[in-house]
Length: 152
Image (tube, rainbow, N blue to C red; front, side, top):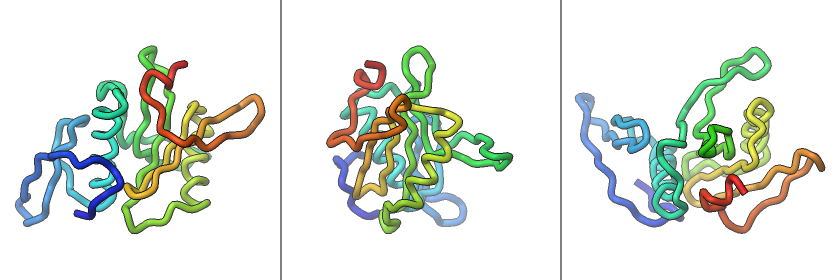
């Protein structure tokens, strides 16, 4: 798989009955088809856990929700220790450009969750913004917050 703009990690992989590579998802405790987007997701989640001290037990991956009577599925949500959603994450394959359409997608998901942080990554470029609901604005951050900063 493509080298990403993240530290390198070792992953458990296997070849399935169809001859396709699967990668072990540490959070969901199962093997998944290793698509380019899944490669980004696994690397980025490992980065959050290893480098930013995010507890794996507080990361929910690929959960469905309804937006305007349409079923959607977000890529990941990080919860605080008190169980409140704090960060919504959207992953794209490395060849997918991060553009306004991607931000609109995550913003639409956030209408229901109203998290403090939105994060988008294609493994090469990572964008994180902090929401300010009182001012109805957001600011892009230079760094991805450590887990302790999610609740401060």
